[in-house]
Length: 316
Image (cartoon, rainbow, N blue to C red):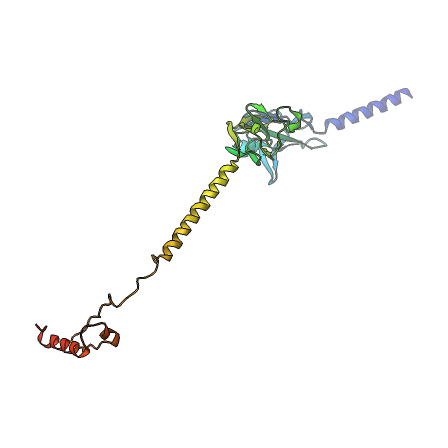
């Protein structure tokens, strides 16, 4: 009886072991690896059990456009053709990672002689990119009591950069009430968008400002830019307006005086400066009564004078 039980137990154990050997099983050391740009990274694909001596191994890159081959028929292809190698039996080593390598990668192993002939694992790779120098905008001068906005933008870093602002080499806190130096300042700082907004600037807000863009790969800063705060000269503005008004009044008065004195009216014609129109040849000119009254010649004598002048020349 004991021998029968032992025989059954050995049979079960051998059957379980046989089934386990006839199954391909994969594992990885890290299913979410990361690296900095231009560094190397290993995507581990380890075969825990297999019976097939020459399994088919494939790597695929999965993006929004769909899967594409990275390793197929024992050759590296695609973007990694000259930047990756396979370490036996199935680990993928990227020797020079770039930002475009950020994606999911799938290791697939097919073992034709195994009862469970296929297995796969998915690895999510992140290539971190250090930020470049951000573009900072700081107003050069702001009137006292007015609002002001400082901006900072950086779009190359991955993961997305977060922003810090500094004044005179001292970090500006997100909340001014947490610092004695900035307690009286009225501003809001958004570390995700990089904007620093002053509701109403004070004299103490003047200084050299610069921004830092930072992520897990590193940080970059823009050069400091000076912001000045100046007072609005209300008295000067009022005096300036008054001067302009006085000048306009003087110009208007001068134009009115000149108009009244006739500088802008046409010269009147009088009998003294009236000029007789030129007369064509053979035309007997007859003068009006007004013209006759203002002349020392009578109509008859003038008519005779004109006739003799035309026929014989002037009478001497």
